[in-house]
View 1 (spheres, rainbow, N blue to C red):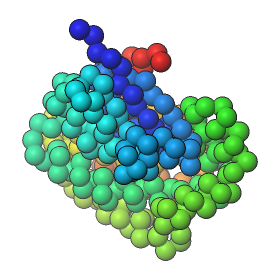
View 2: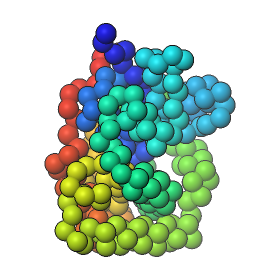
View 3: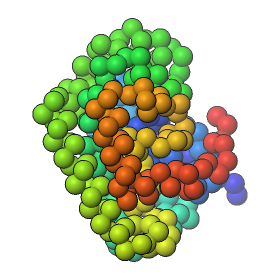
View 4: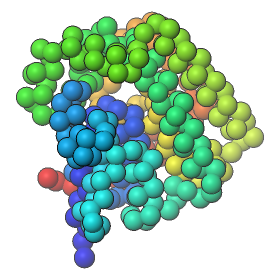
Length: 261
């Protein structure tokens, strides 16, 4: 019996959404992505989670009885490992432990630091926030961008002090995982791709700016605010940053287009 396509509700530019999308593509699980712009996303996430969560991604699997609604990227990956054959994600307990630490530390830090520099630039940020979302949402987002910017800054605690703390966290995280890679291993957990690498690749991408990120057209590095561009250049020199670039060059290629709605 063929699988019913999974519903995948996203903020397309989100690095947590990219983490799940990566595994869906690599595992060739049929899915339909439903992208939404900031603010609009809550009209979908809240009803689907019974009011429990405003965040995305959300993955809905109607192949299970009862249907599964997963509202956390780590839960999504575990479901894909348990129910859709992606056992390569967790070859050892280390993979899950690294995934959890990166999700708690690197993910928020890269997001806060990047948006601190990007949000003042509507010309750069609006195309990123509205890529692959319904046309009506694009039009309203353009009109409401000042509101969206304030809501994002408040919800993610984006200010100068927070950006500096995040910069220190992301540097520490890149240094930690670079030290792990210094023994010459190909991936964080040895010689094969795992959830640890997918998480590092997706959540670290905003600080390395790899080609192909999130399947969204990204501004050229030279167009970014200078402070962000300089931090990206520094991150790219670390072993962890070089792994992220290699992951996107060699491992992050969609296996096939998503299923048609």
